[in-house]
Each structure stands twice: as C-alpha cells, then as structure tokens.
Image 1: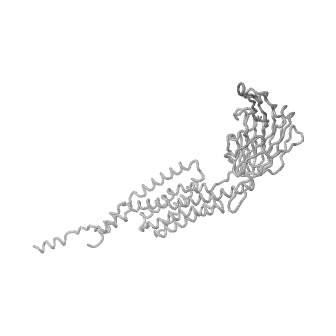
Image 2: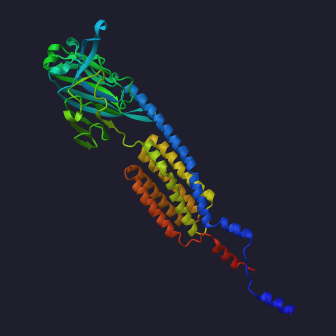
Image 3: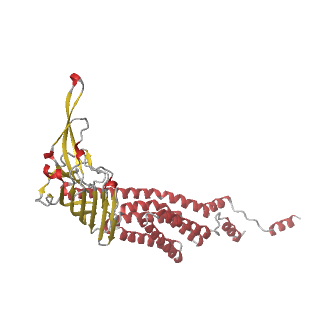
Length: 480
C-alpha cells in the first residue's frame, strides 16, 4: 500500500513555485520597475542640465561685457532729442505782509517746440569683433530740418503776479545727444539758409537723464548754440546735419508739433521699438526703410513747456539693430525643453528594448542621457565660433550618430539603430523648429508630447509590465 502511494505521488504532475529570491529578481527586472527607474534617471539628468544653463548665462554675461567695451570705444546707443528753443527768464515778486515784505526772484526756463520737424537718416551698419564676440555698430548720416514759429504771447506768464524779465539774448537752441563722444564732424546750425552757426558742447540750462534706452554711453549730454532775439521772436527755419557713430540702436524724440522721421539702412534685421511704430516700412535682404509721422495731438505735450529737463525722454521712437540669432538666449530657452527631449529619447529606447531579445541596462540609459546633455555644451561652444545654425547641425549630428550607433550595437539590432537614427533626427529637427518659432513653441510642444504619448501607449500595449509571464514560461520549460 505504501508502495502504491509512492508510485501515485511520483506520477502526479509537479507544481513549480518560484522561490522567493526569484520573485525579487523578477520584480526588479520587470518592465514596470525599469520604467520607473528611467523616469527617476530622467529627473536626475536635470542636475547637469542646470550646470549647462549656468555656463550659458556666464558666457552670455561675458559677451555683454565685451559688447559694452566695444560700445564705449565706438559709441553707445544714441538718443537724438530736439532741437528745442530754450529761453531763460525771471519773475520778480513780493511776498509777506507789513514789515515782513520781501522781494524774491525766481529763475524759470521756457522751452519752445518746433512747429515742424523732419528727420532724415541713412545708417550704415557693420559688426565689430573683439575676441570671439561681435556687436552691431553703425555710422549715421542724419539731417534735422524744420521751423520754429514765433513764440505765443502767453509764453512768459507770471505765476506769482510779479514782473517778468526775459533774458532774450541768452536764448539757445538745444539738441540732446546721449553720447556726444561719437560725433564725427563739426555741427553747425543753418538759420533761414544763412551762414551756419557752430554748436557748443552742453545743454545750456537743461539737463538730460540717462534713460532706460541708453546702452554704452558714459554720460548723456548734448549741444547748443545761441539764437539772437531778432531771429527767435519772428520765427525761423533751421537745418542741422549730423554725423555720428553708435551701436545696438538709435532713437529719436518727436520734438516737433508735427514730426516726420524717415530712416534707411543696410541692416536686414531691424527691430522697431519705442512709443511709436513706423507707419510704413520695407524690409529686404539688402536693408530696410521706415517712415514715422507723429501729429501734435498724438504727442500729448503742449507747444510750450516750462522745465529744466530735456522733454520727451519717455516718448522716443527708434530701431534696434537686432542680431539674426541671439544664440545664448536660444540655447537657454532650449534647455527648458531638456526634460522632454531626454524623455522622448528614453521612451524610444525602452520600446525598442521591450521588442528585442536584449536588455539595456539603466547605466546605458544614463550614458545616452549624458550624450544629450553634452549636445548643449557642444552647441554653445561651436555657436561662439561658427554661428548658431552650423553649430546646431554639428552638435545634433554628433549626438544622433553616437547614440544611434551605441543603441543599435547594444541591442544587437541594426533595425534598432536605424530607428533611433530617425527618432533622434526628428527630435533634433523639432527642437530646432521650436527655437525658431518662439510664438508657437508651446502649441507645437504640447501637440508633439500628446502624439508621443499616444504612440507609446499603443506600442506598449502587449508588454508584460510585471514580468511574471516570462518567469512562468521559463520555469515551465525547466526540468523538475
């Protein structure tokens, strides 16, 4: 009887249970755990990307410092404000009562705006380099023309009921210029077509603040010249030719009751800015032309003003000579997409790994991610020497070929290598497009993220995330 039981027990099918150690190994090697580890690794790679961002900012600050040095030598951002007719006068009045009567005299300054002002400018732009850095600088040939009307009768009104004494022989015509060091010719004022009168340095009784637009100027200043009482009392026309250097941008104040500005330049990348934008503009590869017209009411300031400051410093119009690609800013923005960039690459590798018979260790994932981080460093280094477009092509091609070859050989599959070549090439192309289309970057990025997630969901539908099925299959084939 005992023998029969032994025979029955030996003939019964064996039930195999994986040992506890095998369960732990199965859990750790399951696709689900690996997927989580890849996610953690993706976030850890943000640490070196932050160091790359710090490097980009450091190089950008160095480039700005060199640009300021070039601007100090050549000429900074120019603001041309004026001309204005400035007439000092005094008011004498009595204050107090009884025995405390006293006489006071107050110095006042009246500023008369031109009845019309026409600004014509021809600006030649070139790039000046220092070391590996460059700054757009320009030579400007301009002419300020127009006319002053005779002053209104209420121009010198008493404020305290006193008597007015106009210093008619001290009237000056003032033009504010933010960086007078960059003037390249003597400036003379032609009144009513008569013999030109030379200008003197300084703003006379007025002052000029640095302003938020000024870049590279040491101290804002200007020029002035005397105007005789016989001339300014009856009104006069004027003509002021200017030749000056500058950098980065040029601004004008709509000083006339009606102001017209016409600028042309050989720089094909203008950035129109300020309180007023041009009415008409034409931009081509050979340069640009732009025209402004600012009427009296749009300017929002009366014909006569009493002030000791140059007017309209907060209502300038002008143009910036923009560099085609500010690659420091572009690379800094692209680093914001680094986590998505790395995630898409890791997802592609993960899917290929699950569909192949080979395994890709998490350290290998880390090496692929570090190659993508090095891409940004290469992009920065090459961009400083050969420009952003060529640098992107070099760095992107290097990272794509390296990772595609490494993944293909690691997974023992040429198909995997070719797939990664296409995936990485597409990712780099999309990143380049995102950086070029700043206004649509969020829209494009969100659509791509949705498409990538959808593809991943359907491609990984048949993956055994727990890894238990593979273990059961393996144990069932092993001899008992």
